[in-house]
Length: 256
Image 1: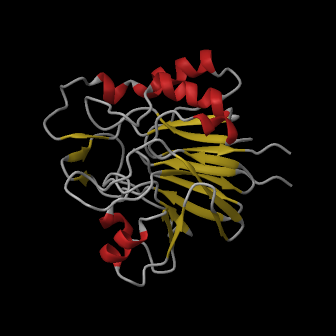
Image 2: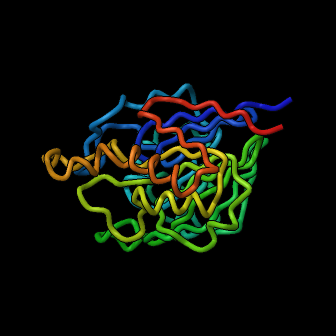
């Protein structure tokens, strides 16, 4: 008997994944502020319980949010890129339960296999910090094969990620510009063409925005999901796209 996979997008890169009875949370940002950014759309995340594992793609503060990680119970395993363990231990305590993975390495979380995959993105904490680590994405393998891309630009190895049932693909950002190492709606559609998932959900857009800048290029906040859906229909017609609003869910029935 096949097992349905449930995903809930809580905005930005925060996704709740339930697969094979295991609960995984990606890049949790559970509050309404991150530095100069404010949540402009969607509810404050209301998780149904504690996850079994948290996947952190890189050190940037809108992906590795310390207040959110401090809310995790001690039994939760935090999976981080290779090189991020030192920062995590200094910030959360020496006894924080964590696993470091470089691209190609994997770990198990109960019935799931979690594999780190490449990402084309700067891995430092920020210009004010000397902390550095790789930026990665993850593939999660259970009843479905799911790719959480984290933050990334295009890279050649996208063609080697599959077969995939679902891609959680970034299509925008949090401000009126989108720097190097990010996907926009057009390049995100190309990423989906390369990876060839059966389904895709656009993420990393339309959630946080700099305080006082709501009138600056608002289309970069509101439009990336719909633009990605249109471009993916032309570029990757074999992939079904579901655009969620923050707090909404998708149930995916893996193939038999």
